[in-house]
Every structure is written in structure tokens, then in C-alpha cells.
Image (tube, one colour):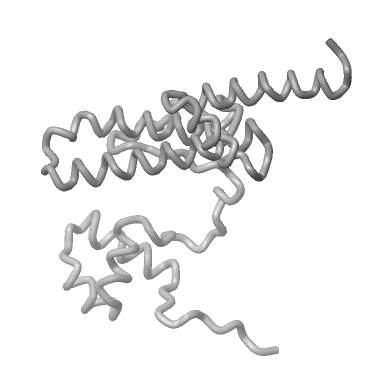
Length: 181
């Protein structure tokens, strides 16, 4: 039976432990460790920074949730979850407004061109969300046409006004059509 081939650049666990000890306990430099053990800079770096397991045992953290940790080692908890929202549009609007509140601290440091780009991008995102909400609430392929007709006769009407007017007219139409008063 053929022996399992080790990947190129494989370092046995005992050698990894020696490299880790040489750097952290004996306080030797990476270049000295590279020469002594015949490994590359990045192999040493991965071992001493903890990116490579020191021993050869299988990982014990598979299938477990890895929590985000800040620089002080404190677990970062989310300000909100997806369960807090009833629709994707509501979530997107919230994230947009949350991002804006965080950007407000940095806004005064931006130059004028960046500010204009930011405002245009925010307006584009908001418009796309409102258009999608309008189509969802009217639920017709010609929702944009209906919206434009209403705004033609009432130019000051907002998207919420358009939805309200559409629902009122739809109810009147259905009552007249079915004969229910």
C-alpha cells in the first residue's frame, strides 16, 4: 500500500513545536530560525502567529460557532439580528440609516467630492428601496406607470401617498365591481 504523500512544505508537529519554542521562549529571530530548521519565512510566521496548529491533533473546534472578538479579546455582540425586521427592504433601510449615523462622525473630515458621491449613492439606494416597496405594495407589473399617473395629477404626492391612493381606489373599484356597498 502506498504511503500518504505529505503536502509540499509540510512541517512535522515536533518541528513546529520547536520553532514556536525557539521564537517565544528562547526569543530568537525569525531569520535564525529559518536557517536552523530549513524553513521559509512564511512557514515560521504562520507557526509563531498561531495560524498553524502546533501539534498534529485534529481540530476540536469544527462545527462550533466562532465569535467575533475585538482587540481586547471581548466578544462582539450584534446590535440587531435579522429577526428584528419584517422584510428585506426594512433591513436595508435600517442598515443604510445605521451606516449614515456612523458616517456622521467622519463626514466633516471628507472633502466635497466624497460628500457629493456619498449623498448621490445614498439617494440611489433609497430610491431603489422605495421603488421596490411601491411595487410590492401595489403588486402589479405596471406599478411604476400607476405611480407616475398619480404623481401627474398630484405632483406633491410621496410614495406613501401613492400607495394610500392606490389602495383607496382599488377598494372603491372592487366594491363597485362586486356590488358590495
